[in-house]
Image (tube, rainbow over all chains, first blue to last red):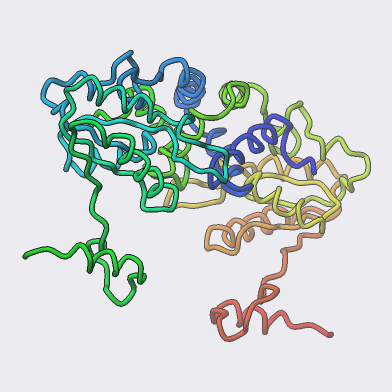
Amino acid sequence: MKHYPEAMYRLIRQFCKLPGIGQKSAERFAMYLLSAPDTEVAALSKSIGELKKQVTVCKTCFCLSDQETCAICRDPGRDSGLVCVVESPADMAAIEKSGAFTGVYHVLQGLISPMDGIGPEEIRIRELVARVRAGTVKEVVIATSTSVEGEATADYIDKALKSFEVNVTRIASGVPMGGELKYIDQVTLKKAMEARRAV
Amino acid sequence: MKHYPEAMYRLIRQFCKLPGIGQKSAERFAMYLLSAPDTEVAALSKSIGELKKQVTVCKTCFCLSDQETCAICRDPGRDSGLVCVVESPADMAAIEKSGAFTGVYHVLQGLISPMDGIGPEEIRIRELVARVRAGTVKEVVIATSTSVEGEATADYIDKALKSFEVNVTRIASGVPMGGELKYIDQVTLKKAMEARRAV
């Protein structure tokens, strides 16, 4: 195989490492960049190179930030007594996009998963307990996924915060909006039935 | 929207310009790079930055190359009397992958398309005629797409080479392998019927 120059092959191999990208997409990317304006290609190269230098982790909530403390933790308009616990920065971004939350976050950077050798010490639970112990937190909303690991982590956090004067809540499980009942799995339906409430 | 640092947003916007990549994929790429090894991220940044410097165009066949003359044109094992005319380097790569061609190529870098203001002068037809005029070419296989532009370009090349002592052929049109007859369009079936041959 020598139908592309080595520099193309190298770039194609590297693009292939991106999540969800195979040989064909990687080739399209490389071809696109060859015909893209020089400034655009240079800007992409620079942004990738500088990403890790410019992005750090907020020392309070462990989300992605460009400063020691992130924009949300710094914002006086956010309720710092209401803390939403999520697995990852991507989950935090999803909740932010919904616009339904006005408190602050705590990013665990993982979930408890004994199968992968990840115990409570490997994720940011100790730091969450310390935040609660400091005394200003009134409610902790656990918004981990509803997977086995997410549920186990939620359970663990609930127990870890038992001894403090803080409300621990869990985001609701149930039928997703726009969901057709006949296509919803049984476990979800059971949860939705159990958690029924007055209209 | 301030749930990611500015450096993340910048990179996400730039990834969104890649063909077929939307907001979600771009976010996944950026998240992946944040957790990828430093060396891998630096290598990707470098490869993108150096791509255009390292990749040039072969002065004989106009395919992508890292030298003045590409690896295929330099290869003494290839039949330089048999020239396959294609639209783009990607088309050339597709034919190379099939392993069905042992000659050399001529990359037009486009197709005649009056709607887009691309006439015969805008693509590498003049250079193809010059190659044929030089006298060593015995057969020109036109392997442009079977689109309107591809057919028009094939026609034009056929006429342009009429006055030379060279065989001009066109790759076969017909039912693709593995194709179910009932799903094949009528124009393709008509072509396949007209071009029928002894078994």
